[in-house]
Amino acid sequence: MLQRLCTVFRRPMFWHGTHHHDSNDATKRLFDTVSSTVKGIQQINYVVEHDPKLTAEEKSKMKQFLIYRYDPADENDFPKYVSYYVDLKKIPPMYLDALLYIKDNYDSSLSLRRSCREGICGSCSMNCNGLHKLACIHAIDTDLTQPAYITPLGHMFVVKDLVVDMTNFYTQYKTIDPYLKRKTPKEGNKEYIQSVEDRKLLDGLYECVLCACCSTSCPSYWWHPDRYLGPAVLMQAYRWIVDSRDEYTDERLEKLAEDVKVEDCQNIGMCSFTCPKGLDPQRSMNHLMKLIEEYKERKIASATL
Image (cartoon, rainbow, N blue to C red; front, side, top):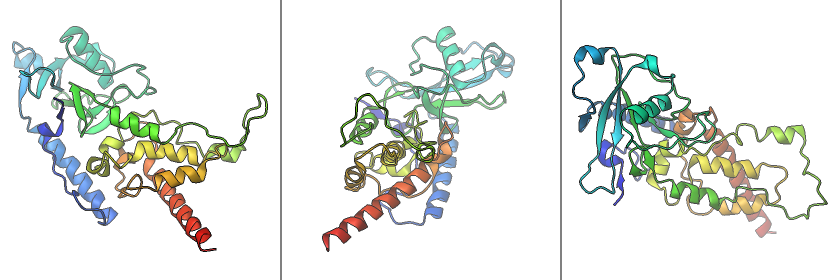
């Protein structure tokens, strides 16, 4: 049976059941929680040394990596951190480089996702020292006196080690119909032309690699992952709504206005803070919520005519 990562971290949930607090206060609480989480990680529940024969002198010349390990399919296994020491002179500078070195040279049983190694595919998203990042483009802290902590994306079901179940995230993405929808038949093989200004509206949106770093850092998504779509999916919904070539704008807005698909956003901003691509989901969601509100007002006004 899959276990939640929070069974290890025991993260405090300051906002549970609260939906109308001041956004600045919520932001402060969010960063307090991140700080508490990092402190909690530093008080590791259980650590296993991969190589207990290493001397203190040998360890002092290498970087310590504390990596979350757990296989829910093995009834005899339990969540733990395994300590590995790596000579940083032997590897390139990114977290993924260290993980692959450990997997290739120390422990082939370590499970993780990776593919492009260029920050394009979004596969290697994980928690690196308390923040959700892409391991392939996040540099290792070279301070040998401080360990590097690597854990799965928070508040997700762990499949094995650093691999989490992304089924719910991808299912939610599918619900927004992430493709161009037209009502007007296409004429021949002509492309749908956009003005330079209309094309610029998509900048900062289409670059999203669906790594889920932002959504899994969002307290609102922690509260309602079954109903709230989260910043990554909502930013992509906004991407198609503002695309001048799409002809289903109102239908998209109507669908997003249901339940808490959008309105559970508390403007905390952790999504934009943690995005490894430097995008701004918070800004996109603010624009999206304004468009939804305008759509509702238009709908009410037309009903009263």
